[in-house]
Image (cartoon, rainbow, N blue to C red):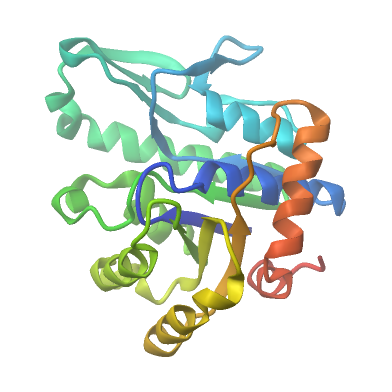
Length: 260
């Protein structure tokens, strides 16, 4: 199974966007690819044709890939609401109540994630996996299924995304790599700087430092975009063009063992 996992230094750093753009690029190249996000915490969801509920971002990624959205693409969806948090497993409501019950459901959650991944792997040539939040939430490591558990289970190469827009991007990348679970550190194959406004060359000293320290390449610097419209078809193609023109597609080709 060919898979690539997009992980982040924080929430809202661009993982969903990059996953969707990569899926569209793969579709345009003729590959059968699909998104996979083991667990999402979001109040915004989408109902599939068979009445299964998944995260709206996963729905957008499925459209970008040109495939039908299904529950296996997002087996765990948590809709937070204080003491009325909803746990949705395999598209169906599993539990409503306090989020503190999460640890009691880990057996069911992990089994659901494994089953969904295996079914998707049997249907598609390539899976682009999206992590959740930060990859280095060490206080939650024992319960982290979206990042550590999924990375171990799939043995996917990892690309680490960080958002430079608010500053501190090099510290964020450095700190995240330092705190990565030791069992998945060797899966890290590159880092991406997202939402940059300015001259790329100014970043080079920081990029050189990280590349030399961790012996992983910068896979790309993506510019800040204000005009990306989704889910229109043209919007997806624009995402793919932006991604391909600013990314090291040779590196991605090697990681996926495909021709791009």
